[in-house]
Amino acid sequence: MNRFIILMYHMINEPETAEEIKYACPPETFDHHMLQLKLNGFNPVSLEQIEQHLLFNKDLPEKAVAITLDDGFEDNYTHAFSILAKHKIPATIFLASGCIESTNLWMTQRGFPKRKMLSWQQIREMDQHNISFGAHTVNHVKLPELETKSAAHEISASKKEIEDNLGKICKHFAYPYGLFNSENRDSVAAAGFKLACSTRSGFNNAQRDPFVLHRIEVYGNDPWWKLKQKMTFGINDASLFFPIKYYTSRLFSRFNQ
Ligand SMILES: [Zn+2]
Image 1 (cartoon, protein in one colour):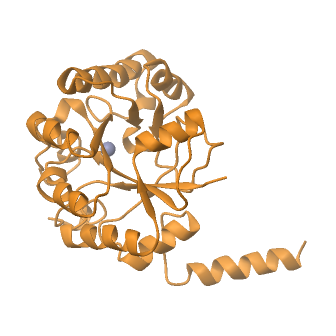
Image 2 (cartoon, helix red, strand yellow):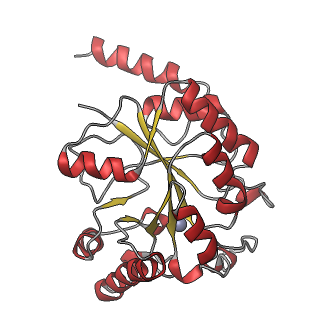
Image 3 (cartoon, protein in one colour):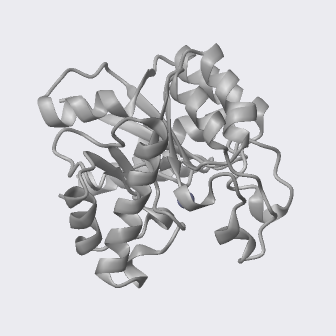
């Protein structure tokens, strides 16, 4: 049984403030991550391939990894697009559809710097070149905080807006902030999506609920060794001592059995 990994990025840009460091991966770092993925034998796959694997049991390569970028920042076009193309790596961008052609309103309200979001023209161009687009609600809302009906509308309206603009079915969804309840999960399925990404950390395999796929969050300042450790252990928080702690606790649990 193949296990596969889904990575989550946000901005591909220099951070402007300390609080952005986690979410803004500088282009050189992103380029290095993509290069190292290939040098270390990982096989980049699209979410479409993962969908085919989960739904129809189609083969996935060993060490399959999918790249996702949340929110739809303009730097995904100005920086990430050419890097992904250079390494021939597919990716999926999850769009908060109401923020397209606008700014990151849900973040500026919390004190983050203002950032430009993608335009439809940029989205359409990338759509022709190995980048796919998923939905991420209209207004980047916390779904469980809304009434189930309003939450379902945020989910289905973002799908429709993307479909109207791209002229193709939008099949993949990501929960903003990783937040959802069982009704939200069912609304995503009922809206016609084929899979959904959460922010729960860890690996996936064919047994995973397609509407609660796990992802590994890449922090903007993760050097390659940290990202590699995250991908080895299926964790979000890497540290120099983690492997030692991991193996000693496994050793002790064996002694204690
Ligand atoms: Zn988001």
